[in-house]
Length: 274
Ligand code: PGA
Image 1 (tube, helix red, strand yellow):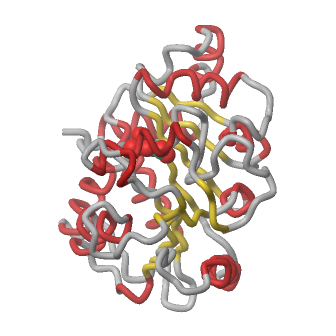
Image 2 (cartoon, rainbow, N blue to C red; image 1 turned 180 degrees about the vertical axis):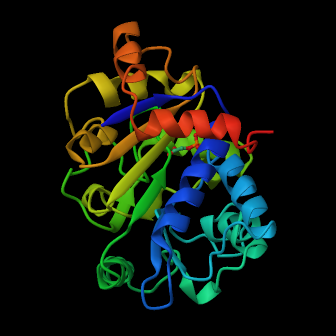
């Protein structure tokens, strides 16, 4: 697993990464780029920047298929806090993606287990995801894979734990009683099956989870640690999210002059960071 502590806005960095990956892949109708996407506050800058790339005709999403990581159960799609609403309002309505290529789990499906099975099969039908972007919870969750989730889990119904419900309650008028307690989520194996995984972490409140992810041992009690077993995973942090890491760890990764190091330089020089 690679760590990159960026000096730039990590949302813009991630957008530049997605832009490069899609351009290099040269997707076509018969060979689409399959992209996994998150919600939350962290990726908002990435979506804003990707919209700019699209509107400036630097990047097209015509041959991109997206799969969202998760969705609440029982919230109507047009509820302002549903992930359907978030994704269309913050991203899909502003780019040239064909809405038929957008896949978000239906938390109102009659048969939720079946919904999850079909979703998982659909990803596999496209040959898996090329790249998935995610955030990280303070407790180390990825998507809605809470502590204790099987590291071999696939898309399924998940009961949310109290700390996640509490964190989400800020979206529901700070009313814990109005906050959904169930969600549909990609599993950890679903995420690990992607060719590349980019996890974004911003702010001091994520610093413990980041330290555990990079320096801790693999444990289902901190699901993000599963990424240590991935062939190509990168943790992209701002300097606050990196606060709990050992200086030695930070220096070690800084000294790897690899593709991520080069990208950090490119993001600075390409002028996409304004
Ligand atoms: P956040 O959520 O981006 O709103 O911090 C991330 C997560 O909980 O996965």
